[in-house]
Image 1 (cartoon, rainbow, N blue to C red):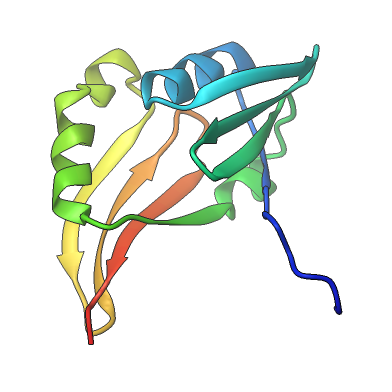
Image 2: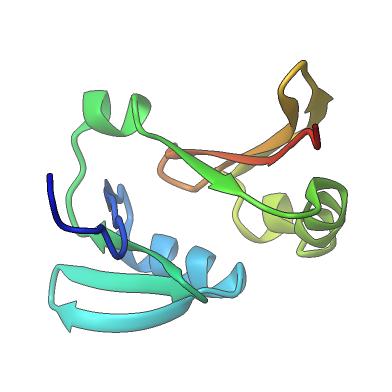
Length: 122
C-alpha cells in the first residue's frame, strides 16, 4: 500500500440494534445514521460502523482494541456509567496489568468484546 491510511473503521454487528445504539451513545460516542441498518459511531478521530446484523459466530469472535492514554481513568468512567444495570447483557472486566501495559474489557449487549488498554511507557 503506497497511500497513507487516514482511518480504520471496523464493522460490528448487533443482536438488538436499537439497544446497541443506545449503549454506544451512553458510552459517549456520536451517532451518525447512515440508513435503516447501519450507523457510524465516532469519538474524536476513531470510529466504527454498527450494523443491524447478527451472526452469533461472528459476534462471539469480534474483538476491538481501543488504546487510551489513561486506562485507570477510563475504567473509573466506565464503572460510573452503571452499564450492567442499564444494559444487563453487557459486562465489565477490571483492569489487568501485563508486560506490555494494562487493559480492561467491555462486552457490549451483543457480546462484542472491547479491549481498552494503555501501553507501558518505555
